[in-house]
Length: 112
Length: 115
Image (cartoon, rainbow over all chains, first blue to last red; front, top):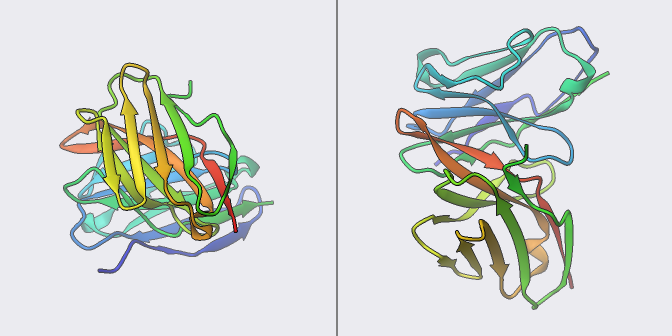
């Protein structure tokens, strides 16, 4: 069974530029999560989807971050415009009927 | 307000000995607890979990203990192996509606197993 796929793996941009991350969850997993992990911290949930609907986006900075999950499968997370403090690893995870979440390798974003 | 706390940023253990990683939580609504292992440049990998109705769960070399009254859990690795060297995250789960769950993570403990 293929795991959670994410791309790109690394991205370097200048502040005020925009960036997008892509995630393909494990086949059949209805729930998809985006996390932000700042160096030295644990992952922090940004947004949770159930199929193609948003369950919780209370911690998503909506003035600059947006996410969508079209057709209840793939998802994209966008930042526009980026700030220096957005430098982090962005992790995508998915889950099926169980509580365990399965993570992709992450995208390391550096904002200069 | 940190709801899941891992107070030891790092831990070094000799190969073959026991590794004990600790985690404390503050939210009484948490009903499921998980441990994840993370290698550099990889995403976290699920390791073991425990429901709040149990006090122990075992899987091979890994055992998780839960003390609900103390709001404390620990992960024991016996015997420790060099390949266990990684960052270990404690996570706690609460229902988030529509039959799905959210995880709150601690900051992690970096385990180094010395050959």
